[in-house]
Image 1: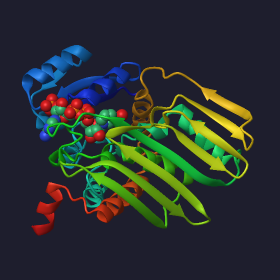
Image 2: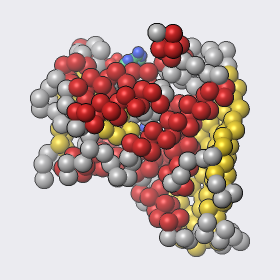
Image 3: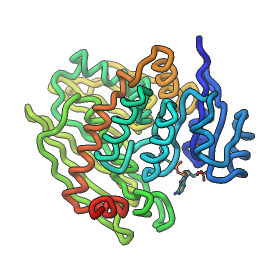
Image 4: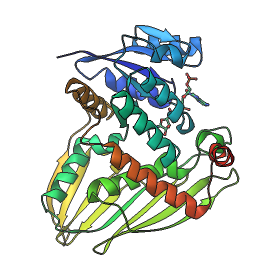
Length: 333
Ligand SMILES: NC(=O)c1ccc[n+]([C@@H]2O[C@H](COP(=O)([O-])OP(=O)(O)OC[C@H]3O[C@@H](n4cnc5c(N)ncnc54)[C@H](OP(=O)(O)O)[C@@H]3O)[C@@H](O)[C@H]2O)c1
């Protein structure tokens, strides 16, 4: 089995979780990490026993020993850092949301295709065993035709204009940070795009959405009722209601269990399987598998679906009139 050499770009909170997960995955190693600062790179490399520490992202992208780079920087930096890696012919696993908007996503996807390198959004939720089982139950017809999906992801974070969550210059707001999960979940389970979108948001004092509600209406009388928040604890569960039954997934975005009921709430099946590490190992394994098989995208998490979810988010933001500073510049240039 070919050993896959990973690099991690960025040394923040998710980078540390991913590095922890990588330690549990066979056939790969964390070879190098990169930060904007030498000392942070060194500290992170020491902590996770990476061979090399770079004080610039460019050095990591140019390292000939690296097969794939995990992009773990704020949303606004995804496009440029992923492009840097792709231009250096590195495979890329890029954190969610893939980019700020559809235009930037298309740019990255085209660039990866041009350079013939692997590219995937790190939508780890879709690769969790519990959620793969949920999808299996649906595809097997265990709840009949899906009629309704309800999913939310929200928490309270104190307002801080400097934080990634509230700062518009870093792509702040609930939709891009956590709303991407219920939207991706609905697309994953239903396998289709909505025909109609209704949405409202509370735009806070830093001009990003602190809360939102989203209704996606699909053909054949299917509805998804989704919400997200960075200011309110609105719950993290998903309910998938079909003609014959119901599936409940607690904390769906990081699910390790799921329950299948009939229409009278008699439990028919369950799935319970603790993560081997912290849940991020499954996306790492999928990338390793794709690279060994010479695939340029994951069949479980393909780029056209990432793009579909970005289209939904662009349409929602257009309805609210939420434009990020980077987009205002792009528009007038
Ligand atoms: N999959 C998940 O469960 C999950 C969870 C949390 C976050 N995320 C995603 O991962 C990305 C990073 O989130 P995070 O929570 O890890 O953020 P974070 O803790 O703020 O870390 C981001 C890192 O990016 C680097 N960076 C580069 N440009 C930056 C800039 N202009 N401002 C601030 N930091 C910058 C910094 O590392 P250096 O200074 O060392 O270069 C920083 O430590 C986001 O896109 C987020 O949506 C995913």
